[in-house]
Structure formats: structure tokens, C-alpha cells
Length: 624
Image (cartoon, rainbow, N blue to C red; front, side):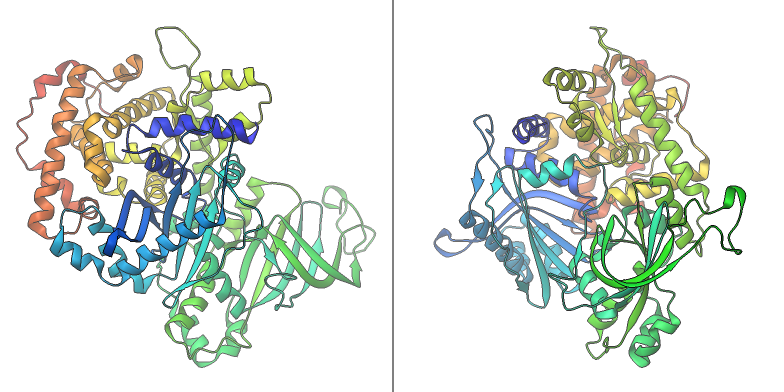
């Protein structure tokens, strides 16, 4: 698929989002952020346009949304430059537009950091920017990094170097996701952004000697990373350094996020012993370039210590060599994220901590091909000191693989008797990658007709609707990866594997959720829209004891008029109850209150005046 075709198709996605957002710019922002959130270490995000003006209407700051990382250490601000018409070709964004965008995001952060929220609270307490300004003001001291991210369907002008800036003492990363970068990343079936380490370029001050062992399936490189290098990498990339599956894996064990006190104590009082006391880091990479010396140890199948038969060496080319690392492509830590974070936080919290002369041993594994199963086995083996069972990964994969298979085989009912499927995107970018692999326009059109964009759903949305329907709406409104982790814990613990009925009921819940998010009155709810949808679904499940006829919704591929009317009324009741609670309890927002487990308990105790009999035709005896 050519980039021009991709840009035109992108408009279809934005058109779908327009049902949820007031402007094309916000719809575009929402669609792109949803697609790249996991890849860019954004767990929770808020899409809302805020403009701060000063004297003479001069713009002091502007954003189109913000996101926060899973560990709450990285704030990302978004600025959007969107062209609603790409039919006549793609245009370039020039440096002036780029500089304006960076300055406006930087300005917005600065006014928030300087307590703009206090002025807003006095002058206009109903201003939607108040919640965002308050959040940044209260948390700015805790941010390890701020990302200024420009989203655009234009082409970024070549040769422009992004200037590095700081906001107070906080390092800032500026980036542009133009149509080329969006195209390149949305078709990649990967849940992380590539981190490439160039020791002849940006990192040329670091000289890393290494020992390499090479075999058929992989190369293993042992080296030492200076602690100051890990500090720099964590400051720049934060938990992007961790393979996404590892972040999920580590959440399963329920371990503490607090820095390990013994590591901090060693760094503070006896830093040169850190290497002796620490187990080191295990990482994977796509490739490594080594300036090798002539030192080489060959291993021969004739060696008396070599195994015979099936266990014999497959070749006599296995060897150990030494050299200096020149570059590492797609570096990801699979074990040692805690070590890296402790080094960074210890120095950040106590500038007197001396990192000079502090080293960490690194075992780097380079795959000769993309071996997902082997990668997961490495991840498990490297983290086998936690309480996770080996079946946790296989169960997760089996669940998702089976659901994916069903989504390709089960045809959605329709009056035209067409072959239409609900497409489960098991891996981020899977839909775009499949579409991109089709070179003929006719094949692409057939694919879109068979798997319509509006019937595509990913594992995060699946988790959200299931968790809400399970009467745990406070978990459904948390960040996407947090909710998905909670969901997979339940699926693994309960041994749930999807069958045809499970799939059809999940789709029915997706139909219900999509209606709640896109109904005409939902736009006015702003960022309360998602909590209202989650709590409405949870209350409906509780109110009917789980006896809504979900198969009827699947068969009709739509909600009944009676159920639509009921959901409209219930959504208003939920929203009014939220407003009452935040006014009475002094919480800052509906979203923050909705994450409290008490919120659903209090909702269940109010008198709604809704009639069970108004939806009796939508109720059956079976629970789900």
C-alpha cells in the first residue's frame, strides 16, 4: 500500500472517530494516540483541546491532549496539525509550524507548572482545562521526563534537527509523528518503539568491550554497561527500555514498584561493590555490530567433551570472540528494569551518589530470526525468581490465538448475507500489516469489506468491555495496559478459553460499548464519557443479574430500541450521580472518582426509577 493510499484510508478512521469528538483534529489525535499508546509507553491519556491566551490574545500555550506512563514518571503532551483533505496529495509541514507547535506545548506546561490552575479555579471553575492544569501542577515535580509530541498527517520537512530543551530540571524529548512515521509504525506488528544505541554516534563516549558466543539460533554477547549509561538511557526512554510483554509479565507477580533499598544503599555507601552484588541485566536485540579482534575460540564436534547423536553440535562454526560494540539495534531489557530504575532514581534523589566506576553486567541475546516463543522463554527464564508460572504466558497466548481464530471464522449475521467478520487485532498493527501485504486494489477492497474498520477491536478494548460487564468498572477505567493485565489475570486464574458463544457475547458487549461511546449525548460528557460507559454497563449487568440476551444482540448486530432507551436513561443517571459525588466528596474529576471501588457500591444504592419490565424482551434466564 502506497503512503498516499494509507493517508486516504486514515481519513476513514478519523470519520469513525468524529462520532465521539467535536472536531476532526481531536478525532485524528484520538485515533493516533490509541494506536501508538502502548508503543510509546502511554498508559492513560486524555484527548482535549486546551488553549491558554494572555494579554492581547497572544497564545501562551496549547495542547490537544496528554498521556501519562504506567509508572507515572513520563508526561506526554500532544499537539496536532491535521489536514482533513489528502485526496490532492500530501503536503509538508515546515520548520516554522514545527517550532510553533513545540513552543505552544512548552508554554502550556510552563503555565500549568506555575499554578495556572489556581487562577482558573477562581475565574472559571467550569473550564475543561482546569483538571489538566491541576494534574500537571500537582505532579510536575515527579516527572522524570516530558515528551512533546506533534501528530500530523503532513510530511515533516527533511533535515530538521530537533533542538533539545529542558523544562526546569526535567529533560524534554520532542518528536514528530508525521504521516511517514505513522505509516511505518501502524503497519508494524510490534508493541514497542525501537531503541537503537549508536556507540559511534550519539553514544560515542562509551567504549564497551564484549565477549560473543554465536550459535544457530542466536548470538549471546556479554559486556559491562557503565551505570551512567543506564542512567542516560532511562532518562531518555524510561520504561520504553522494557519489552512490553515484560511489563505485563512483571505485573502478574504483583511485585513492589519501590526501588530496592539494598541496591540504593550500595550505590550510596559502597558504589564500586555494585557489580559484585548485582545480578545484572538480560536484554534482547535485533542486531549488533561488533568491531572484532582476532581472538577466537572454535568449538569442534570432534571435541571429546562434545555430545554425540541428536545433541551433537549442528556445525563446527560455533565460536567465542571478543571485540568492541559499535551499535545495537532494537535494544530491549527483559530482566533488570528494576536495576536500571534504581540507578536512575538513586542519583536523581541524591545528587551526591557517585556513578563513576559503577558497572552492571549485561547479557545481550540477538535472535537470528523473529522467534516469538524463544523470546518469551528467555523472558520467563530471566525472571524465574518471581511467582509467575510458566503457564501464564502460554495461557495468555492460547486465549488470544483462539479468539483471533474465531474472529476470522465466525461470520457476523447480516441481511445481505455477506461474509463479514469482527476482526480481533491480537497484536498491535496487525490489521494494517495484513492490509499492507495486499498489493492489488481489489484485494484491499475485499479485505475492508470482509473486515470493516468499525468491526475491528483490540485486546485492550476487549478487556475494557469484559471487565466493565464483570461489575468491576473501577478496573475498566484505568489505563489500557492496567485493565488488560487485570483481565488476563482473571482469564488465567479461572482457566477461561473462548468458544463460539463466548466470542458472540463479547461482540454483543462491544456493540453495547460502541453505542454508549458514540451516542449523540456522549460528546457533551468529554472525558467522563468512558467512565459513564463502563459504569452503565456494570450497572445494567448488576440490575438484570447478568440476564441480558447477548446472543439476541449478536443475531441482530444491534441493540433493541427498548435497550437503547434504557441505556440512554441509565447513562444520564450515572453521570448525574458522578457529578453529585465529586461535588460532595471534593474529588477533582469524574475519572479519578470512577477509579475508586466505592463508586460502584454507592451507585448501586441510589434509586434510579428505571423499570425492569421496560427491557423484559431483552432478558433471558442465562447469565454471562
